[in-house]
Image 1: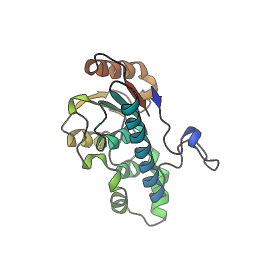
Image 2: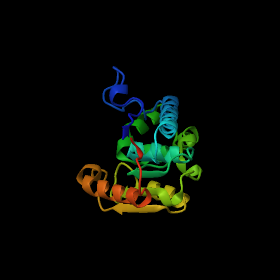
Image 3: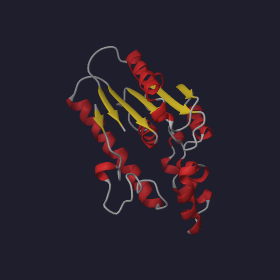
Image 4: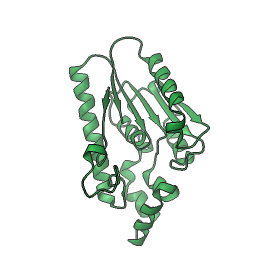
Length: 207
């Protein structure tokens, strides 16, 4: 199993950051795009390395922000055998403008004259629902939370519908279900993977 740290997270957190991940998604529009691009480049390189040096399928599992990155990678990378995206966002601009975590980023953007329409245009490249995934639809699992105040369910619904409604579970919980429902998340994820990967070693990437 390979655990990937997103840009500006954990050991990649710069000294001027107040907390892990603060600088990846922010009111700095260009840096947000660049950090997203860096995450995609890093992960695709890791996936290709696994395929070239290890045996068995590659499985990628992303949670929250990692789920959103997983969705983006799925539209670009055909060497992913199974993907699971948990409590994921779709349109980043929508999340910033319409959810509690985006409140302060939105305020900073508005103070600098950026409108919602502007942000949709600026961050359009980071919207995974614009393209169909290159992963086999039968090998995709999306998991959402019905009462998620971090990831609006309408935003998650839109991606699911845009991708032709692959397998999806909607839990009766909020974003805290990542912790409170961790056993169910683990069991559902592993069951899905086992049904599609019968034998051999796998390269599991978690973010």
